[in-house]
Amino acid sequence: MKKLLARLYLGLILLLLYAPLIFIAVSSFTESKVLGNWTGFSTKLYSNLFSGGMQGSGLMNAVYNTLIIALIAAFISTLLGTLAAIGIFHSRGRLKNATMFLNNIPMVNPDVITGVSLFLLFVFLGVSQGYVSVVLAHITFCTPYVVLNVLPKLHQMNAKTYEAALDLGATPGQALRKVLIPQLMPGMVTGFILAFTMSLDDFAVTFFTRGTVGLETLSTFIYTDARKGGLTPELRPLMTIIFIVVFVLLVVVNIRQERAAKKKASLK
Image (cartoon, rainbow, N blue to C red; front, side, top):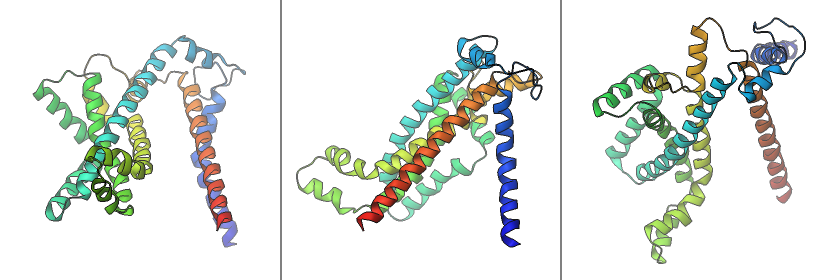
């Protein structure tokens, strides 16, 4: 009975999680503008999305802006976060504790507070609002996540390896590129993916720092669209494509991890 109840509970949770996604995916194959109104099978919404028909053009521009901002912010925050993690790792005492405390504040601080604070800062400094302000804002709240992903790798590696490279004649820059970076790469990749995801998902900080230049990301586009009284039908195929891409990536990653585990077990 306990196993049956546990399976029913798990099935209910999965149903609540995936039923809306499946509903949206099914609704993406009809031309109806009203969600849930089936008017026959059609791929017109997909063609509108990629051809720029109806609202597809503005939606795809928002997607392009979102991806460009996320890639730039994730790349720069990965570099800054890695260097910051190395500096924190080699710090001692109160300086290290104070730096870690300051690093954790942006992650626990509400997004609205972060967005308003950065907006006031950019206005005070005279930074033009648009791509520049949004990218700087995303770098600000993404970098601490990279630091937390790189620090465990620093604790796992042998700290004397870097010193040995210096003793053998390597410059600090060469030791960083050829000794530290290869060992920190898994943490850097994880931090990059997390920063990229956080940037894609952000709304509040982007909303307050984008200004009035007409810059739209996916989150602000959906917010503006919803305030008009409804959502653009082309959002349904877009959400379906995003879900399929994420699902396929997860399957591939899980298969690779399972194969790596079996290979490691066979070697033992």
